[in-house]
Length: 65
Image (cartoon, rainbow, N blue to C red; front, side, top):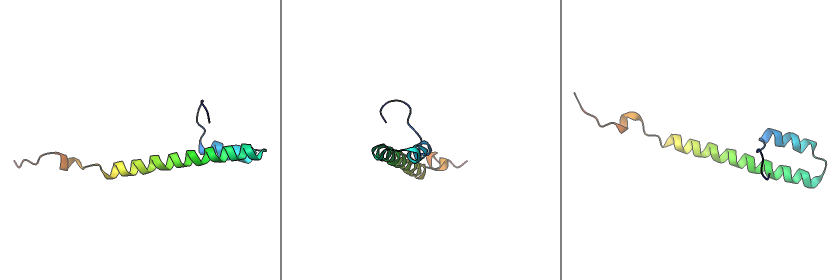
């Protein structure tokens, strides 16, 4: 989708149902595939980032009182 707001996967699914032309349907499905892959990558990156978080206790030097 060139320029403008990016459509959500839900909007693309609805557009695919309404598509009359096979070429239009193919374009919509390709865009849907890109959107789903992007969302999957974001979730994967987030999971990786949260796994790498060091607990606060491990970042503070231990000083017995």
